[in-house]
Figure 1 (cartoon, helix red, strand yellow):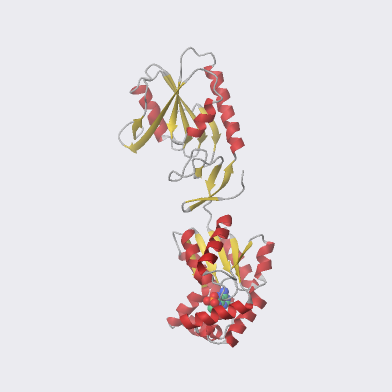
Figure 2: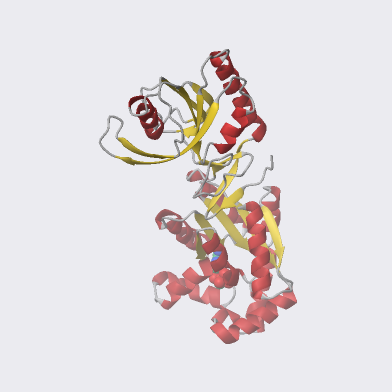
Length: 376
Ligand code: AMP
């Protein structure tokens, strides 16, 4: 099994149950079925519930050694007024099951609404003699029906999974292993010297991974523009290319963590900028039961920093881009205070680097997103 995470649409999934373990579970189910149906005189129906149980039923059939007929059905269900509360629409029941023994094959049972309604329907409406339920996976914490599940491959906690027939919006059914959603909040740090293109690339990254982009520089400039007390205090330091006090930026960061909703995480840009801020960030996240996910460094050399910032000065007119002396101070501040963070995060096994020295904005964006894909 690959150890890598995968992405399906907007969600990230991490490895959960390897193929070999799935097959072991199917071996177990097949052994029980073969024991129970050994020497049967009738021809039981294996009822494959499409599409999720295609891989399960396929593997199971190869292990079944009593005569059986396979029928595949597709179901849709909605809540209505029956004893189970679920009304079923069943397509593809191509042969009569009247008076016959039926084994329903499901990929997963969670609340059990559908499977229990299906069993009831097969017995009451279709006149089946006996209906057994066979499922590869069961979520016992969610299953709340009094109906016995006859054959269960594996019990799992209540988590959203894909692979081996299970899908997320129809994707992922073809994956050999089972993956579970990775729904921990993500805390990415977009790292690099001033002018490396963090602000330029941040939008695309934030959009792709549903992150909130937080640029401490931008937040501070907004405070200055709004003429707040904080802005007034920060202005002279910023204009000189020096750092503002740690407590100021950390307050802004914590505020964002507390208030931003409906995102999968954060993309921090311009924070942390020294070792104290990095250690404080670890503490802030630890309090929330979280941690830094990864640091992506965009690297350019000092000469390129001058070129980029001089170019930006013409477009954006930032006071701290105004002359080479201020730029030099920011580069010095970067090397002396910010660069040591590379080692800090390397030691934590969280540092990844992308070379953005050459290349157009689009090429560099593609490189950054490709790197993010390997760690997302
Ligand atoms: P930036 O837009 O990231 O280049 O930030 C512009 C300026 O804002 C910096 O040169 C600092 O003066 C200030 N600033 C931004 N982030 C921080 C931070 N994490 N710590 C201290 N000062 C910061």
